[in-house]
Image 1: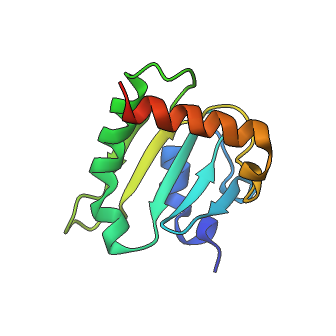
Image 2 (image 1 turned 90 degrees about the vertical axis):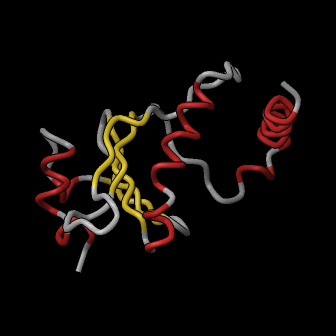
Length: 124
């Protein structure tokens, strides 16, 4: 069964104005991401990933304050506290564009930019 079907009511609530069947879905190692026009919903794939959602939100807030030269997703809403009945989720503001393909760092320009960001993160 599709993630759009199993979490239909949640997606309708978190992504108002969107038909769940029309939303793009990306599956990562730790999260399933459902992409709306202005927001994305991250659904953890494991309990461990769910437990890390608060730290993920905090890290994104911290990165946004570092002025790294690029936008970071803004945490908007978090739900499904540990031990509750609700499905754990994190809603982020969407940054326009397309997700990077798996081989994106094979492009020298992308690799150079990623290297510059890594240096700025390590050396404030």
